[in-house]
Image (cartoon, rainbow, N blue to C red; front, side, top):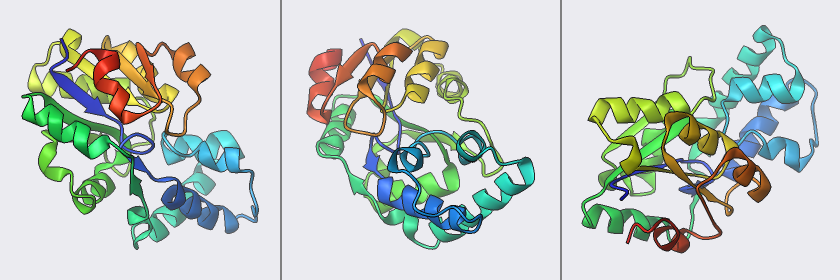
Length: 215
């Protein structure tokens, strides 16, 4: 049924909490914010930085741009590689490719970073394409990114499956008319994934094929 499998990056393929949180803390320190609540910092994993700084700290446009610039300055100097690949994800991606599926990375993270991270963790050869955003993009909307992959490769929505750890992934899938897997091992909450309309919910990468009937 599903021939085109789309993966979110942060919280789904990689546990990028250390990289993102430490970079956010660095940016916030320039505004006098120290020792911020963990839950608040973790909310930056998934949506765009612009949305997060605006939502969590009510920053105006000027301060938001400054915060994003500070974040990216430290992030691209090496923090981006401070990630772990979730257990079972490499095996799943490789098996999907071996079975003839198309595999896509669909992420709100700028492509300039995503490409380097996927290359660094050794999974670049297994993705048919990386669908992401430019540095100037401020939106957390996954729907347009999923639709971009569908349009670019003339995919049938009913043969597509989006795998992600936050409500943004699930809402994007629902909006694009594709089924989704909400993974609870990332940074989203099970109840939020369910409320957003996840077709399937799993606690480990190894559960995905069985839950979604891929193989």
